[in-house]
Length: 160
Image 1: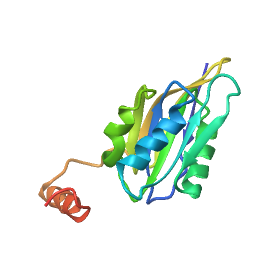
Image 2: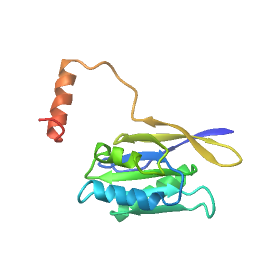
Image 3: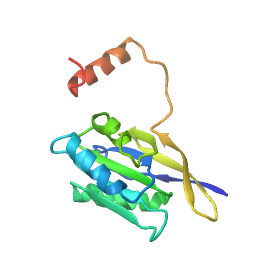
């Protein structure tokens, strides 16, 4: 068995949700869930089919994000994994709805950070072991850090 990793390619202003599901209907159900969750949401999603034709299936409301999601999922190549790329919305806006989709088994991460997907590969195929989400800590938050965090949450509309 080989261990490898793949970096998810995305613009800085794009958030992502990486997960695993179990059925070809995932693409349609995730599309309906996302489109119904946030009015005007821009997203692309892709799903790695791991039986039958074994194709990357994709959809979305933004063609650039749809294609980018499909290219990333093809590079990851792990059975039944899916990737959602979001613009003008945050994972917090849709995460519970995505988790409630019948086919969704697991969420590996939901972030705007750079992500590296850690994979195990055998003769049968690839599986996601985990993710590297962002960078390691540089220290412990002080009073200035607390003030910055609270200000950020107010600027992006999550606190008054």
